[in-house]
Length: 146
Image (cartoon, rainbow, N blue to C red; front, side, top):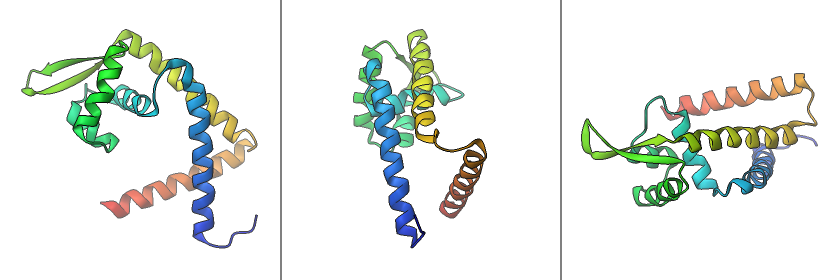
């Protein structure tokens, strides 16, 4: 495919991202999580300290009442628990449960399999090149926003 303009690259990137998301959704379906619940659980597990509900809403780019629905489902599934923040009794902290940690590991493996499937046609050197290019774009876009 010959390069014509940046819109063509954007379309290709969107198409590949949709394929990756579809593949991940298929891999994740046995866990019974929605994409929003998966994203929330993934973000909670990455936090160094238990995140506040408001912080999770901000990170996910959703309104607080929507994050409440997502966290309600995660809590009902036994994946997270809520506790009042002792430093600010109006804030709620989110903790990963043992079951949540096990599901986190399954999520990681499902995402790895989906990514491996998508990138299988690329040689290791091509993957390295792509990773470098995407990292450079990510850094440039992040730098432009600050």
